[in-house]
Image 1 (spheres, rainbow, N blue to C red):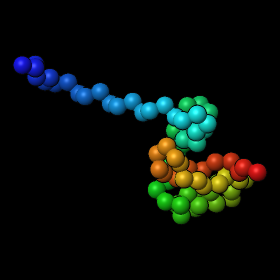
Image 2: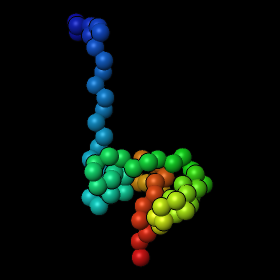
Image 3: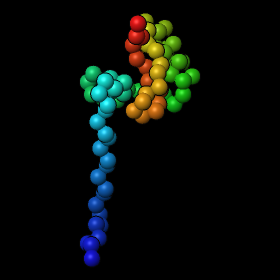
Image 4: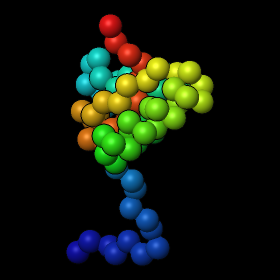
Length: 76
C-alpha cells in the first residue's frame, strides 16, 4: 500500500522545451516570458501605446506555444 503524502505540495509541471525556431516567439532574450494579451484587440491597443509612448514599432501575433497574443518586432 502506498504511503500517504501529507503536507507536501505537488511539484509544478515543467513546460516543454520550445520547438526549434519558436523560442523567440514566446520568450525574451533574457529568458523571461513575453507579456500575454488575451485578444488581438488588446494586443493592438498595447502596440499602439508602445508606438506613441516609446516609438517602438511592434506587431501583435498569436503565439504557437501558449495560444495568447504577444508583441514582437516587425519582420520584413
